Length: 460
Image (cartoon, rainbow, N blue to C red; front, top):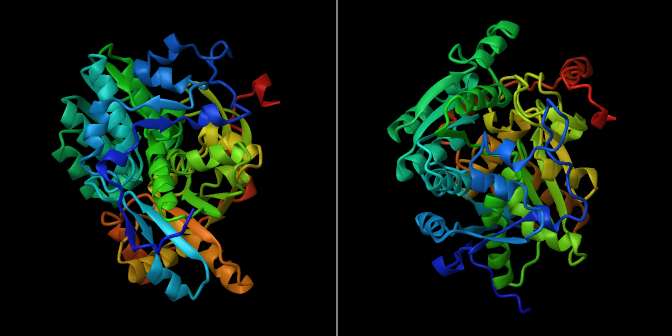
C-alpha cells in the first residue's frame, strides 16, 4: 500500500462510521473466565444478569462467538452527531520531543461529555428504552460517564440517577451541574441513601469513596425497581464492544495513508477505552497478522494490573455484584484521592485482564505528577487540554517517543486521547502551585485490599 503524505487531522466520512462493532471477546483464543453467581459459585445465566442489566446488553456480554455485531441504525444516527472523531498526527509534539517517532492520537473529546464515554452511553440508553424501561442508574468517577449517560438518557426520555464518587464531586462540582442540566439526579457516593452506602460510611468514615462504592449503591438502587436497570461505563465486555468504534475508525484512517502502528497506548481504569482502541489491532495480532506492542497505562496510586492479583473478585465494594476473574487490588481496596477519578477502580476488565495474563500486552503505572507534567507539555504543543485520565496515555507515548530518540528507531505510536480536562482545573492548579503529591500504596496497604478478596476455590 502506497503511503500518502499524512495531514494533521484525518477525518472519515459519515458513511465510514462503523456499521458493526468488533467483538474482541470472539477474537480471543483464550476466553476469560465467566462471571460467577456469588451465592452458588456457578456461571451467571442470562436470566440472572438480566435482573441487573438490559437484556440486549446481557446478550452481547455473553456473546463470544460473533466477531462482528451490527450497530442499530438508530445508534449510528446518534453517532453521526459527533462521529467520526479525528485521528491527529502530532507533528508539533514530535518536533518538540525531537524524536524520529511518528505519533498519532485518536481524539474522543469532541462532544459535550468531553470523552469517549458517549459511545457506550447511547447504546445502553437505546437498549433500555427499547426494553420499555423507565429509568436507569449508574456510577461515575471523574464525571465523564455520568455526563455522557445523562445526555443519552435525555435523548431517549429515561430518568437517571448517578452516584458520583464523593471526592470527584467535590473536585469537579460543575460536572454535576452538566448532568443536572441534562436531567440527571446526582448523589455523592458513598451516601446514606442506600444500605451499601451506609455500610461503607460506617467502615470508612470520612472516605472520599471509589468507583467500587458507587457501583454498589447504583446496583442496589436498580434492583429495587422492576422498571429500572443498572448501566456500567466500563469493565464489562459489552462496554468494550461499544467502544470498538474507536479502534475501527483509527484502523481505517491509518490504512488510508498506509500507516501501521508499532505501539498502541491507552489509559486503563476499568479498561473499556483501551479495549475499544486496541480491539481490531489486537484481533489481527492474535491471528498472527501484526506484531504491535500494546501498552495499558494505570495510576501508580491504583495499580490493579501491575501489582494486583488475577483472581475472582467482586466488582463492587459492598460485595453484591457477580464475581469476575480479573486483575484486582481487592474489592475492599480504597484508592487515594488522586485526580484521575476515572481510573480509581480496584479491578480491571476481564478482557483486558485475560490479554495481559496471556502476555499479549504490557502495563505500566505512573505517578500523577509525571502525568500532569506530560499533560501540560501536550497542551502547550498540541493545543488541547487533556483529561488527567487521558494524560496517562500521553505520558507513556512521550516516554516511548523519547526511547526512539535514544535508539534512533522510527516507530509509529498511536494513543487514545479519551477526553478533555476543562473540568479538572483544580487539579491543574494544584500541579501549577507545586502542591500536588504522589501516593503509591505500600505492600502493607495492598495486603489489606487483598484480604477482602473472597476465599473461593476458583482463586487457587
